[in-house]
Length: 328
Image 1 (cartoon, rainbow, N blue to C red):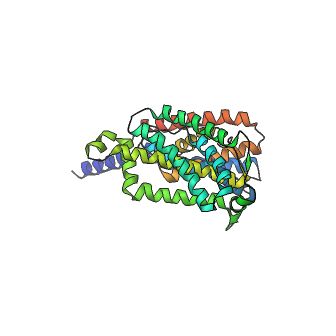
Image 2 (image 1 turned 60 degrees about the vertical axis):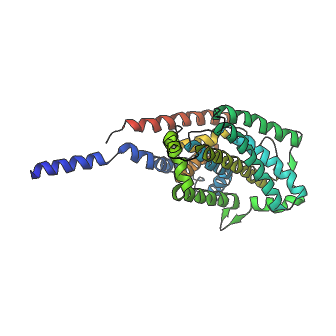
Image 3 (image 1 turned 180 degrees about the vertical axis):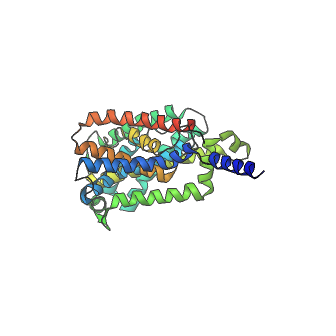
């Protein structure tokens, strides 16, 4: 009788450890550590303070957009318009600071991004149209509107935007201000996703939308909300890019859709919705930054980097789905 009990308990313990779940939770962090070790072995300049801060500054815009993308992907959606909305945010920033006080100008810019997300969200949430198609249309429209506003030319911030440019190029406690803002937004997103009703329902919608709908929750409003959040954060990312360069340009964010989706997927979020975390997404952003930095230090041409990034996305998705075959 005792032997049977012990055997049963041992079997329960073995079944209690899920290798696939453990990999999904900690695999991203393990990959990040391995990449750091690899990068440092390839170049002594990698872990210097200047290089680390440079990576954080460069990835701040991608990181801010990745937060919004995570919320969208958790609902089983996709937002291909983030790079174009960032461009619109960049151009709008350069224009608005000329005529309005800085807080008002930034409010208009972020509001513009939110409106772009609102338009996409209405068609997706209430008309039930495919997110891929709608956000693809918004990607084209937002970029075109940015080109119209700027006449296809870069717009300098000038003296009215000096405070914004100072913010984008300065440090606080030794960390670039754009990176600090990104980290603060990740912390806020962590609290919202893990400790609020909104965050729990966003995850639930991605896991089983019909069950949430049958429980009396208005799913459409939550889906609409995540696209508004994504649009607002994309416009804010455009502000950060402009604050660093001092120029508003319609070319900002070109191709960033790929980078943002890659960061979220590498962070372990499921494109089928319902699974993903803020901390892992943050690490996914850092992984992208480290990979890009490694290739830059190694002198890999920019076009080749895009090829490698595409391969990385495929591998990440394969690993993500492959863990479902790892049994207890």
